[in-house]
Image (tube, rainbow, N blue to C red; front, top):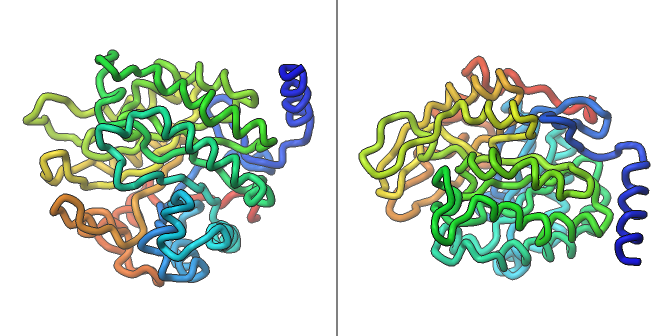
Length: 351
């Protein structure tokens, strides 16, 4: 009987006319059935951008030419500690839409634990699934315009970093997303596209290359897009340590396997594990994305702080100000590169 109930639910969802984002092959489509390729910016609406009204921040971001924003949000206890609540999330999403930006909300869970030795625990995925289920009624009115990024950078740097499995670190662990988060979210009736970060803090392409299609097949609606974060592991120079950077053309290899993909985060500079600033050829990343119709969202608008003694604002801020457009060197790269913001096309929903 349970199987029959789920089957009937999924059938009714599929029979409805598409009124949500969906994928077909390696492409993403909006609710008007028009292809959408993200050209966007990450914004910390639940953190350092929170002291500014979303109406002001989203208006400034829209002036860059971006067509989308990836909104950072936190678990309820962390949100409460910052003096925020569900209404602030709704406001951030609505203000993005008001400024013709497609909103992608990502759950940044236990931010202080991201990357530590416990971050591989499957419990985090299960908790993320439960959190989204608890918020579906709140978000339902945005289903035609919103993408859900299930969990930011789940799993430590080691998990999925190597081409083959290591002890305690299996590429196939990405399949846990199905039982722990995707299927619970689908059971609520949510039909929109779910964004799935890859393993190794979202930097490794190998779990997607080897198991991406299997995970898509486990989604009752087969409506997933994968996300890679291109930081120090995607640098250009020959390393001095025991691992090599990824070949940027692996991004093209993923879409050639007919798997949907976006760069959920990237920058042109980022420190490695030794706090050494690494150059990432963002020009090349942008070119590959443009040639292969891969969406991207640059990290991040404004307010990056000091982490492990490294001032990330000098590498990662796109704007000098939260509340008005004033490009940094990183922002100017995105503005002036022929494959940067000038390739941005607004979603047909906002035509």
